[in-house]
Each structure stands twice: as structure tokens, then as C-alpha cells.
Image 1 (cartoon, rainbow, N blue to C red):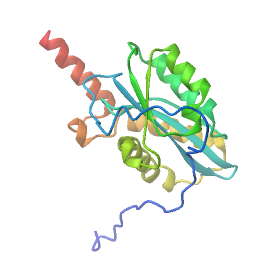
Image 2 (cartoon, helix red, strand yellow; image 1 turned 120 degrees about the vertical axis):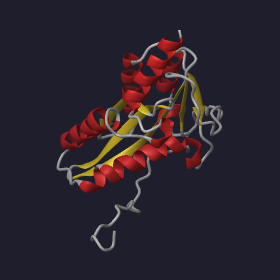
Image 3 (cartoon, rainbow, N blue to C red; image 1 turned 90 degrees about the vertical axis):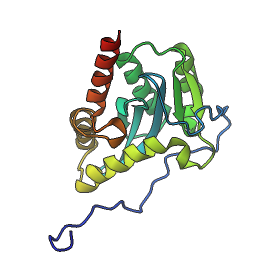
Length: 207
């Protein structure tokens, strides 16, 4: 790399607080307990927030990731980091997927996920809530890994003028690249979409 003048992209140190765990809402137990293995789609979802700098201020992103295939099954952006953003991503995931009763959704202890509105939405669709321990990023490690890749491969390479521009970049990264093209060593070097198709074929053949 030195001879060819190639340098690796590195993460930036600047960080915006996206988790407010100082609230009076009930906190769910850590049911996931760092067991990052799912046997089928819609068994375990992970979710978290991140931020994207723009000339208009920060754009906040909430993502929902299916642990089985690492596929992003729901996402939403907003200029506000609130429970409405979390609900928007969750509802998109619920609409796009099926057979969700008993599914576990794991997050940090942020007020957005502990809010009454979010809890009521989970209850409506029969979802089970799990929350990380306070200040422990390892309890949601695959979600942290996704955001690290997203920042290095997309955000740090661009300068966004507007919220709309950042949102279009998120859509392009997730829908065109990450879900359909990006290969994962943990998935046998399939993309999330191809991994789900491959496993579906294997189940069909076995039957």
C-alpha cells in the first residue's frame, strides 16, 4: 500500500450523543445478551441511531437490521432524533416483513426506544423488547458494525448540503449497495438479499 500510495480510510473521532438513557420510562431486560445468532429471518432485529453532518445541521438515521441475514429491513431519517424517528423505521420494517409475532427487537436504553409510543407499537405487533446494558456498545455489536461500515464507505467520503441529499445517499447505500451488493464474510460472502434467497432455496430443496 505504501509503494502504491494507498491509504486506508479510518474512522473519525468526533461523536454526537444519540442515546439519552436518563429518563423515567421502563427499561426492558437484556434478553439478547450478546447472543448474535438467528436461525431464521424475523427472529431477532437490532436497531440504533446515528447522525450525518450536512450544511443544514445533522440528519439523524434510524435503522433496523435483521440479525439472520444482516439485511436492513427498515430505516428512516429526520432532523430530530425522537421516538417518531424510531417508530417510522419500525413501521417500515413491519410493513415489508411478515410472520413477526414473538420477534425480539434489541436496542440501547435510549428514551426513544423506552417511550410509551414505541412500547405500544411493539405490543400491537407482538414483538418482544430487549435493551443493552447502560453504556455497553458490545451488547449491540452487529449494529455498531453496520454504522461503522456506513460511515467509512459513504458518509466520510461526501459533503452533504441538505437533509434531502443525505436521505437520498442513505437510500442509495442501503437499497442499492448494502442490501443487494455488499458481500459479508459472516454470510459466506453473499449479500444480505442473496443470502436470504440462497437459504430459501436450500429449505425448499430439503422439503
